[in-house]
Amino acid sequence: MLPSLDGLVFAPTGRAAAGEVDAATRFTYREQDGRVWAAYRGGEIVHGHLVGTRVGDVLEFRYVQLNTAGETAGGHCVSELSRLPDGRLRLDETWTWESRAGSGTSTVEEVLPARNETRPSY
Image (cartoon, rainbow, N blue to C red):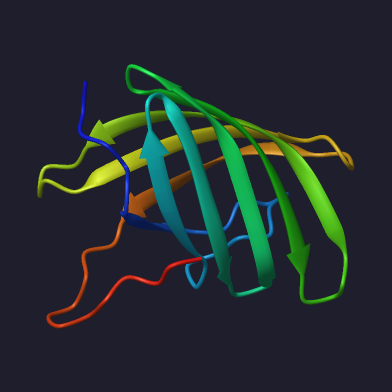
């Protein structure tokens, strides 16, 4: 099993056709005893949360978010955790909106902190 996501920040590698998050969105993860949760924002996302579980290197969670147009939306996601050649972590995601039509796949990768940077606490 790969290491805990607790305190790590992830960013999408691009934008899925039916999605709203993009390279400007940042996810700050927390993890404890098989439970995972994150806050995210940036780009078109004003505020988002996800909550779920981790079994081995697979995460399953629900997400809910508010976009810049003032619309709320939510859905379900299953993500597989892997390690990139440079040592950072990566999540390959398969998601489905539950509040509207649409589904897709996306990838988020760990963002390493810049020197002397502190992580946001959402």
